[in-house]
Length: 329
Image 1: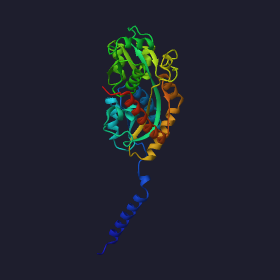
Image 2 (image 1 turned 180 degrees about the horizontal axis):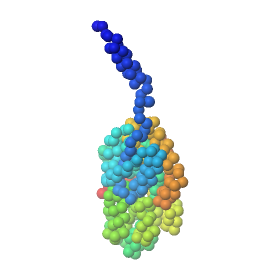
Image 3 (image 1 turned 120 degrees about the horizontal axis):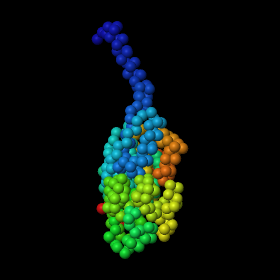
């Protein structure tokens, strides 16, 4: 078959274009990120996860030059949001705030999950450790943790406590304390900290175990009476409030953690880029100031360290749950 000069020229141009597309794929790809990023938060607004997520999102938006949109997906101890994140495209444009329920306790608490906390996620970095506060409505006669324990022993199964939901860190902390104090208080789970705090402030439930992030303002305002924190030492934000360990239960500690993850399969270069930006955001003086006001301690990591931490937490919390026979309601 004979080709005209024009046709031969067209074939040659097509061949060169194909060759260049193979040789220069990186140059042809738009730089990451080139559109908004969605950060899935498995809690209601105003809870601890949401508060830290918004600090991170604002910082990342400035670092990356793209909007970071908070998408709250509460429910089932964080499992609903985790499932959505696990099934999202692995392109770096969907991130997830995981914590010690979704990536620690939930496999033991729920048995079968719709996501695998290890296989379905690419860890980016730990973010913070957050203690809880055991508080009561001020109308109660309880003014200390010892008085709460005494009342619970005198009236077994007659008191109730609120938490931010089944399988959350607040639920787990409360159940661990119940086992340690040998008391029986009924659990009233809520879909997040905000409605739980609101009901205890309103007097519908007498006791609450909640994150310091979402309870501290209510304690300072006198709308909740703080009894003790579950941290290993007193908090700078509430220096006069004793720890559980100081209140007759030495060694007791139950601190939540949270971190940012991407769906499994997200390119390692994007994960490493995100890690660098997260560490920079969390190291800023303004971030330290905001986190300190919340009562949260910044604890960043490499992706590899976070992955090892998740596996360790699943094993550790699973043993605690089985030993204490803790079950979701």
